[in-house]
Image (cartoon, rainbow, N blue to C red; front, side, top):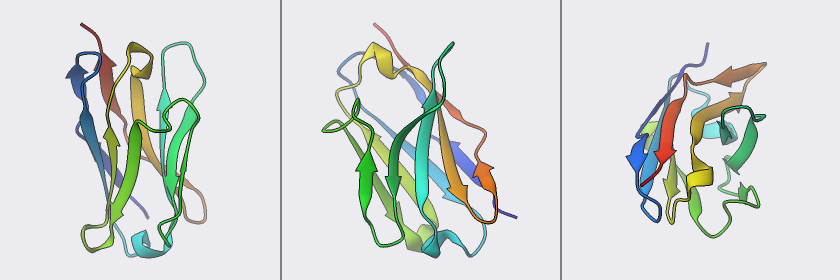
Length: 114
């Protein structure tokens, strides 16, 4: 069983920054790809960023150059540094991995508003 727990969301003004964290339980963290998704009201869930076990990173077009995904295998944690935030980044952000099935965290709300 894999458990994912996100933290770090909140309210931030446009142009501001936030750093999300996702702590993973279990021994699979070091060998698994980890992803961040987001879902805004009335929209489908979309991939924001992903990172492989060998540190290869991929980003959605809307966040390239502004968001950075990273991982700390010693802490079983994946991070999402979000800079230059825009109102359209407002969403619930979810951590995700696949290990025999899909595992999701409970989500953390990010609101970008003045």
